[in-house]
Image (cartoon, rainbow, N blue to C red; front, top):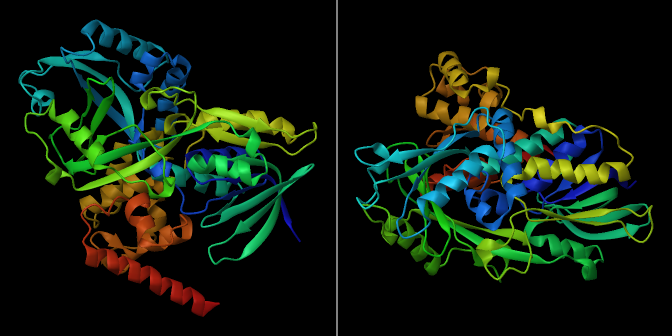
Length: 506
């Protein structure tokens, strides 16, 4: 018998996972399908920031910035283990935006939305201060303000976990091959990881396929109705850490763009991003030599000790699926989200909602707005609920990460500090599920790679849809940085052994 759902969500990025969570929390039956791993495309390739988007004020996107500023503290309260405050240092460049303009922009940034936890902006001097240490002597001062850091891929997983806990089904490595409207429902043909096919029905569909959103519109037979899609590549580089303090830098460039230099994984600095039109396969996008040179030239305009290509230890690129507002400048294309709701030819036709654009910062509001459009069509009158809901692992007393970390240190005093910190930062209160009854490192099983024990891998397979070493090393964690080839191979062999055990048990 073909199973019927209220809502089929296509796409396991932040928008799809957020909508699946919101819908399941309203009591709807939900199926989310993702053709690869959760957060395997755009949502794991961001600049890792929960931020209002200071530069978007220059493009008069006040609604987007205000909504993003409001969401910073909502998300900080929901997931204090993977989201935390970050101070941004903005050097004043005499040849670029004047001080009065920076002050005015930061005044708006401070006052467009109410702040509870994050301090406002202020002027800073670089003479004899830690903020000035890595900078050229040309820069005497500037400004600081607050935004937040986020582990982007883990945010997606936490939303999928919460969706599942509220009744949603999550199927990764599952492609939605076709969609066909039958008056009051959709038929979807799904292809699983083993090539098997299944048909499901849904009263409504959310097309959150990101860079493939237009492809899904065409699969649904609505190609002529597709809204404009603008694919823009954003690339980042990672270098050894350029400063000792924990602040982030925001550097202006003469072309009007900015770049961030952010402390990353303790030992590194993350630098990005670019804005380049994507014309090829979004799944195969890579950083170009020109983009690397662009980022190095930009930051070297500020750094006392310049960086070279030899300093780049890693890079990554992602494709932003933006709504095409016909702007010739890729950096000026709107980052706001746009909904394309198709309700067919009659009032009772099954709807499909396609999503263009969006930012990781505003994913929760996007999901809420999507359900406000779809819930009435589905006969659901549940109230909005996610604004005060904690994500898995974030249920720490008073949302106090430092206090929870201190408690964890006392509870698991046999865990090395580096490993304990990583586990608490990644999993929050779910660390107790990973460790279970263990009382020593030996109880966590074999150390498959440095600081990666079997207990964590078992948890990831059982609770986070992990299937291979890449899922672990580059999305659920960033342990891939610094991992040697033989260590990666050991993890791959562990997964292969688990697959064989699973086959033998069938």
